[in-house]
Amino acid sequence: MDSANTLYPDGAIALRGGEILAVGPSGSLRGQVRAKRELPLPDRVVLPGLVNAHTHAAMTLFRGLADDVALEPWLARVWKIEPVFATPENVALGTRLAFAEMISGGTTAAADMYFHPDAAAETAREVGFRLAAGVGAIDVLEIPSDKPREVRTQQFLETYRGDRLVHPCVQVHATYSATRATLENARELVEKYHAPFITHAAESRQEIAQVGQATGMTPIEYLDSLGLLTPMSALAHCIWLRDDEIELIARRGASISHCPESNLKIGAGIARIPDLLKAGVNLGLGTDGAASNNDLDMWGEMHTAALIHKGAALDPTAVPALQVLQMATIGGARALHMDHLIGSLEPGKRADLCILSLDGLNLTPVYDLISHLVYAAHASDVESVFIDGQMVMQDRRLLTIDREEVRQKALRVAEQVKAAL
Ligand SMILES: [Zn+2]
Image (cartoon, rainbow, N blue to C red; front, top):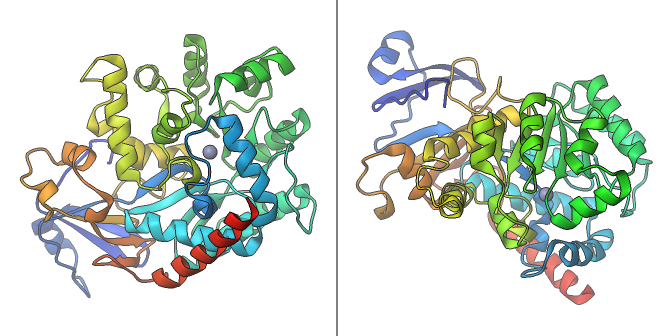
């Protein structure tokens, strides 16, 4: 996933510490590098770890809680449960479950927006997962906390600045759920900390109407008027865009995190991805939270992203496989301002690797590897995973998470949620 989309049929990759030292044909790498330890990977694909550009990790605990309803009743149901159950302990647990699921599918980094991000960040450090996170500002919901939000936001940005795995962001839930003062404060923080800005935008028609009534603008115009439509911005969804808004987003250099399965499931619509690609907008791919997807499977997401736009546009050339794989790797990395670190396998970048086996019946035979990855591969074909040079899954065994423990604990919390509904 480098700028030339280089593919080495008989390739090798050399790691030193957490860094990629060299990538290339195995013959020439043997001449350059003497390895202390070698990992032979016959009939395997080594690709950049997938980047889940938009999720709410701890919502794995609420997987399947509000199915087959529209966004607004969905939010009403989730927002009833969260003030009680979104405790730091549960956030740590749900996030751990999310990391287990994501690592099992070759996802090595995610942009997370949820309550108690410190609990998620500490879990990321413990597990060895790369996480973009921040205090998500929302003004329509009160979650009990020990300190005021401004203090927690500053502290988070300070604590994780320059961290190896946790990448602090400025986050606002959405323009319809935050006050103008909150959004203005976010812009100040983005400038002060040079941190990425993450928000939901233009997800539902009701949102367009609501923001229009309150501001006389669309969510995109409103963000732009506040100085929040910049190359630092990663906007989740962006389904309901006019032509001039697509041009504006492209001109401002903002990124969009495309979440096709969540959008389909909530019946929110289909984002104008072919038009956004044509306009040159950088796109990441995200699963959104497990309560609206209902999994964190980036392979399923790639599959959906590659199919729906062809069907919707009656055009089989729309959104080709390579562009989908770019969204799931380098595009997401760019959206989160991590493309100097991850998103492609290039010397000097961090060693976040997804190793996929081609042994599966679903992957036999192979004509075109890239389209195979997007159209035929499953998360279960991922065999081993490295994050920042650390092996976190080997031969499908998670090395930094006790799979059964996290499962049993999540089942116990779900019993309490059921009782509270
Ligand atoms: Zn979301």
